[in-house]
Amino acid sequence: MNEAVGNIGKNGPDTANAEFNDASRAQVSFLAPLEKKCLVWLAGRAPRWINSDHLAALGLVALAGAGLSYWYARWSRLGLALPIVYFMLSIEVYLATYTLGTFHLSFWKFSPTELRILLIIGNLALLWRPWVHLFGDEYLLFDVGGVVGIAGMSLMLVSAAVRHTIELYRLERLP
Image (tube, rainbow, N blue to C red; front, side, top):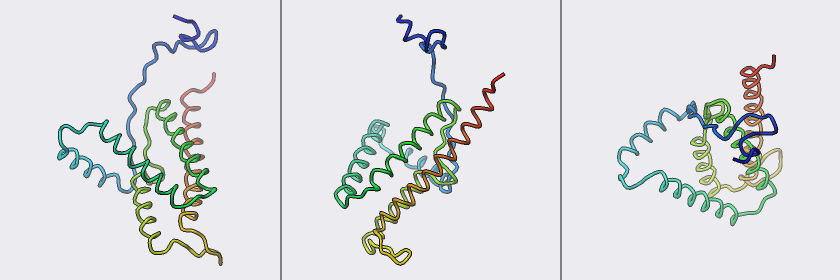
């Protein structure tokens, strides 16, 4: 075995035999109890030939379709910032899951399910009133929603990073 593959640095830990430990799932959003009941109900009634690969493919197609719809609808400078902060928050969650052993799906009682409901409401509102009036000016509804989303996810990111850094520090204090 190549020494660089088995070690990090000259005297680093052996990572060749490292295993990923299962992480517990922490879902504490507003709709989590109802969502769990619905998922169990749906899983019990789904055809046996459907597996997780089919559901992942369906999610990917739906995500691509939604993305193309928004791309086609309007260009916006904020369209670069929202995915960036979303992916930064996702990466923080994945790193915390690996290092702390808990997969947090929600922040401040707000999870992807609540986000999807807000997007549905926003899409319906967009049909009737695409413009909103704030501070004496007129803005596109989804531009305002994008700014709110960027601010909210940025706060979640900073809060989670600080909380997880403190927790990791407590778990591995220096002598």
